[in-house]
Image 1 (cartoon, rainbow, N blue to C red):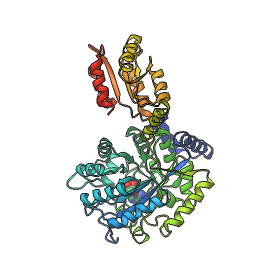
Image 2: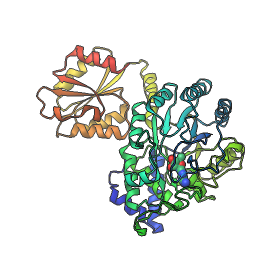
Image 3: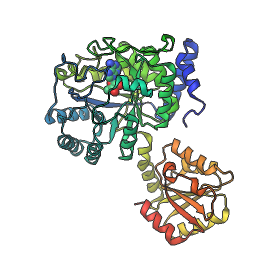
Image 4: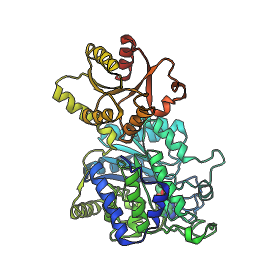
Length: 486
Ligand code: 5AD
């Protein structure tokens, strides 16, 4: 469960905290939450920076098309495939294809590359290609891409517009785009830079709230690093805030944000990022992992290209070979008592097919399990009769709390819930709790004719996939179940 006591105010308070003992409490809480929710495995994602061309003019980033100093490159499909195979050889579960917003990478070509990786390797594919048009994102998802990273950089609209100019064709709205990506079925990753000129403590606290609001699967944050060939680096853009409100771009601030991100989104995959490793070369990466993070993205870009992927100067590990980097990383993980993850390392909710597989093995048949939550025992009896007479298992619960406990215990394939139970919002609460644990079972809502509140319920927003009228008709219920459990 996300830590609900962390209001924006408290988050801001933590961001300003400088007492080492108090900060130790924060590190410990984050580390403990990390251990309980995502465990000791550190997922490794092989990073391929496939092109440094970019059409955008972001004021912080060295890939901006205004940077004439940069030698531009694109990796070939063969080089990308070789990189993916290398990731596989190292035992990584994911390859990340990252680039500037480069329309020289045609979507047809990209989809072919993704398809080949998916056909030729067991890797999950993460894309990080900027704000490409929706139909392209759809085609890439169709081709098999699993995840998309798109940091929203800051939740402060004004600051965003200053540092991240829109293109003439489209107003940039990364929050909206993240929501669209989610609808397309991607796991979504967002995040911000820490210590951007003009970023206040209050803004950064709100950024962290947004992690939770967007229900991010992955959260990437790192300190802002000055690039001299950018408008921010040349100080052509100056923040208009009280200097006392300016967040510092330090590794310590980054640990704070990582730790708080872990507390507000306990199950998210959170990398200890390269920018953090640059801000503290000696310890940044491991301290990130000990203060909430559970992912590292080793860079597999061929060295001859890597030096030109200059988002900011002096990226960490510029020279080292992939082999050397990999064995150093594994050694470091061992010294902090962590292990390298195996498999794609998706956010928890996608592991559910595995547990239902176990359940099916235990039960020795594949009957779907339906959880019914209603405070009326007659309704529960009626539902059980219909379900068990037609090839389903039924589990029942008579209030929200019991429903939630049964969900955790039984991991049902589908949930039928009466929204109007003992208290008016009991059903809502149950749904919210299920959501917080990233349920994947479809939700059906029971509704009585004349329910005063029914009209005001936004079923789509609650993630309810169908409404069943009481009294429940066997045929219509069974039809819905067949459709939803395909
Ligand atoms: N310093 C730190 N991070 C940066 N990024 C871009 N430029 C910089 C910089 N100068 C981050 C942005 C972007 C991600 C790929 O890298 O957050 O989304």
